[in-house]
Amino acid sequence: MSCALPPLKQPYESGQALDGIACRRLFTPEIILDDVLITFSGGLIEMMGEFASQWIPPNVFDARSAALTVVPGLIDVHIHGCGGADFLDLDEASYRCISETAARGGATSIVATTTIPRDDLELERFAEFVRLLRRLDPPGARFLGIFLEGPFINSEKRGGFGPQYVWPVDLRAADRILSLCEDLLLKITIAPEIEGGERLIEFFHENPRTTVEISLGHSAASYELARKMFRLERVRQVTHAFNAMHPFHHRSPGLIGAALLEERVWCEMIPDGHHLSGPAIALLNRLKGWQRLMIVTDGTGATATTPGTRIHSVGGWTEVRDGAVRLLDGTLAGSNLLMAGAVRSACELGAVEFHDALRMATLTPARSVHCEDRVGSIEPRKRADFCILDEHGDVFATIRDGRIVYMAKKAGGNEQPRSSGP
Image (cartoon, rainbow, N blue to C red; front, side, top):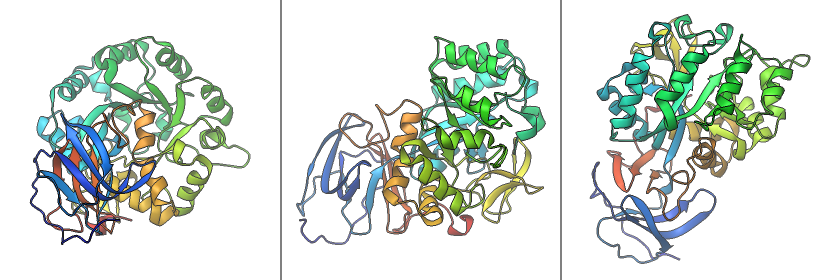
């Protein structure tokens, strides 16, 4: 049992490299530990051990306040942008903004999500996007790789995407995309029912150059077709479950019905009260569990901006309105959540246990894109990535590779304005 501690001091600042962190309560996230000291070396976790001393080594982050909980750095595997910037901007400043804003929400790793417009048929702008990702060392959350949400989707289920972001199947373009991305391409959304869709899925699935995960989405696929696709080893994910697909019907269960009944299928969940209601969140949690459910933000450029600020996106002008990001006609165009807010919202709206919601935002997304050997949990030789939460579930600090990448100005965090949540 630890000794009584003086009030937490804050001799820390953003950008500071640390030698470790002392925790009162730590979620790894698989187990919960009290009074732990974790040391870092070269940006990796070096050692973990019991620590009940009132003394603390120099340059170690003191997170032993009763108000603080230490968890792994959060992982957002579906985010197009935030803070007024989008990955389609093709600008280093925009990518730095996305990285910093995501870190403000507790994320230490994100998967850069984008699509390709029809006027980029030669993929020149897409190639620049890939080059920027490879060369940029972002100041906040790192970029794990690429999630290509389309452009091979069903125009009837394009959701917040404008029609210029919907392509017919083009195997030549698919091969060029693969050549440009190589190991960076972690996931791609495809609608299997479009002409050539099954052939395109087979192209990615059978190609020896990639282990990309194929996610079904923006789709009007039938239950039978979805089940057929889910028999393929790497076709086992669904993009933002319930959204941009036919709703469940008792005589035509569709893609969502197949996803819910197929035990091996992983689902993305946007728990903001707009994309999913509380009962829908609870249903997904009950049927899929944390092992097959990923919390994502589907953030876009307007995410975490002041309500009413207009930001141009893939579907046109967007703004934060009534707690969600919407096109001017009211169509949903991404959530207004950062990751810590998404975890809190899943707990509040869907009655998801915090421990389970945390795993849905760390270990499960890491496994979904095959990065669990580096991130997603706190154990020796993994990246020294941490999110420190206050008693409200707001972000107090974010540490990536053993360095502070976000520090709240005061206890209580500054993850995002409470008024912008659900």
